[in-house]
Amino acid sequence: MELKIQTFNKIASEGLKRFPENHYEIGPDIGSPDAMLLRSFSLHNNKIPPSVIAIARAGVGVNNIPVEECTKAGVVVFNTPGANANAVKELVIAGLILSSRKIYQGINWAYSLKNKGPEIPAMVEKGKSDYAGPEIQGKTLGVIGLGAIGMLVANAAEGLGMKVTGYDPYISVDAAWQLSKYVRKAPSLDALLRQSDYISLHVPLVDSTNEFLDKSKFALMKDGVRILNFARAGLINTADLLEAIEIKKIACFVTDFPDQVQLSNPNIIAFPHIGASTPESEKNCAVMAVDQLRDFLENGNIKNSVNFPSADIPRTTGSRLIVINENIPAMVGQITNVLAEEQINISDMLNRHRGEIAYNIIDLDDEIQEAQIEKLREIAGVVFVRYLP
Image (tube, rainbow, N blue to C red; front, side, top):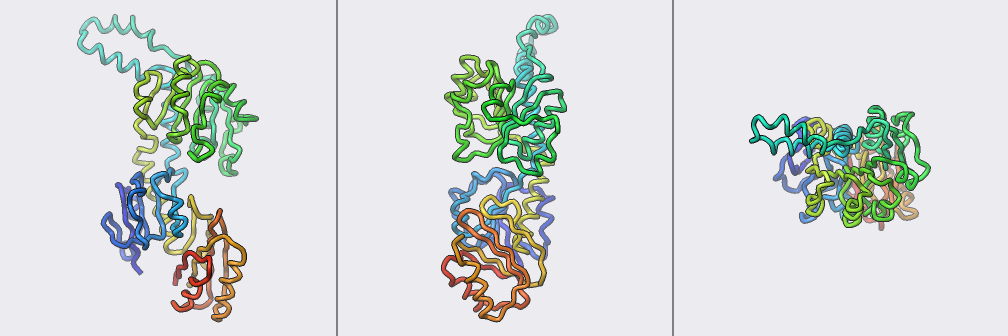
């Protein structure tokens, strides 16, 4: 069985090579694809073919994918959390230092002297005081969100001599295990905001975090605080941010998501969304996305989906059935009853749900025919059925 993968953007070759050539057809112009593989390409204005059962994003954010529409259609959307974490961490640390030391402002000024000839040394000595700034050692960094990136930022900043406080009510066990023992837990978000000299955001953009930092939050912060946003645009209320900068509540704001207003303010340092722009990150994301996509297409296993539950079991037999259904009562019973009536024995089964969707992996002792699969599709509430011989 040959599977078709439609690609968008440039996907690192290290990832694409992990598709076996004799089982996959891959390219940007594939018709009726089984899956899509992309980076930042937006699918919002592109009709997703009905043949597609999975979309893999070689990156973390999925705001370029119509996730809700995909869920209703039974399309599993994957991302690659942690694959670009080190790349983003390094840029955050660079932003942290740039926010303090006025390095890039000083560099720009130095280049403005290029035609001054022998006067340059004296001018440098006279003007360098305009670009002085505090050291980060001994200062307090508040990290909001201790996922893959936030955890690395906290550890790196602690290693640079900063006092680090973290806040994340949803911290995972894995992140907690990897967090430095010297990173302190903030008793509340407000407490972190009040005590931090620097604040770094590492939370997703959802309804509850839209304009997460606004006038009320800025009012709690120290005068002269420095804020870094390498997470998502939309986490900051821009009007309130500019007002806080104007009254010197905020000394510097560093972002990887510039807009017209922010680019006009000298106290805002804007990066052109390059947090994950390293060859290592692009390779890691591509490899992770391809591996997850292959495991789903070949075995039905789900890892790192943003709209479906995690579901991963090794095959116990050579025959596997995947059933996606609405998360309503009595669905499992109806599915297993159909198989029992058809004299098909189940050797292993996994049922998981997330929100309004449920996902079933069913290993069978016997092969199943198309007419029997059709009976499963006819069950009210079943969204999609796939057979993996």
